Image (cartoon, rainbow, N blue to C red; front, side, top):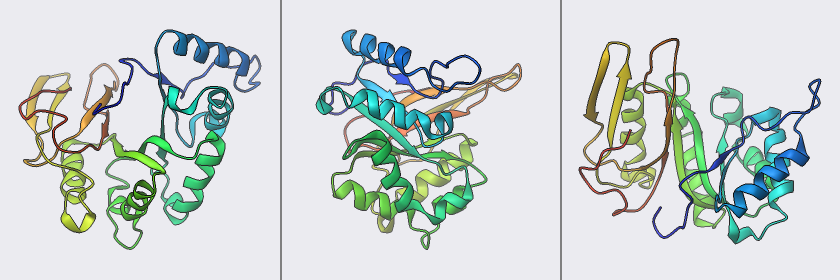
Length: 232
């Protein structure tokens, strides 16, 4: 990704090892996992505000604090699936930095942009995008992006909004392609004419059929993803 030496695989921290009888995260085993990852060259770690009831950030912060900060890349996410969180954006961001014991996030995402929260994400009075861009300018977010669990039209609407000049161009330009899989077959298409992102993850299954459910897009400057390249 750009000039970063990201490992091809990363460690997701949504389902860390558990102690018996709902005893919480097995920190010793998690530390062993992180150590093994680091020794094998895995340097990308992905957590979120609500993973393990907030304990994922805490445990990963404790473990990663033992390593040189420049030896790993940490991704975290704003919990936009809960509308009440939009009233305390700065408080949550500061809490996340504290839990993770870092001064900045390498990657920070607006989590789960979807039909039920896209209006809040795009509400200029709430101002979530300008706030995160301020944090980025201050060096507290290195790369800003979002994850989408919505339909392609919702994804396109957010990309169109975020690319507007008065939204400070959070989504730079080039081409983004998507692939929609369903039980009835598959189809490919192009979302937007001027939107470009790096796809970090794509997966999802509902029932017995697959659909376009969860793709993480990292905002980047022009030139990363060539026009005409396919991602899915």
